Image (cartoon, rainbow, N blue to C red; front, side, top):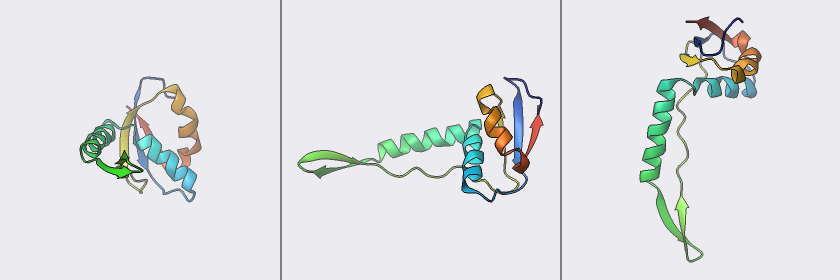
Length: 103
């Protein structure tokens, strides 16, 4: 894969991996898409506004909601991200499940 740092790449899932580790790697890469980042930030803000405070042992205790899943490693899903050198090993480990296009 000949990609220089700073180039925009588009990745598409062409096959769902059989292992959970590979699925998690793909999902971690998918979260670098600007639309996913925006959705995650919006959810983070909403969870902060809806946080409940209960009493536990006579002290305030914050009950935090679980994070909603924004990305899913399903066949046909695609995303765009900027390539950085720290992604090289992650992309190489799941390259057989992805269709990667530069530009």
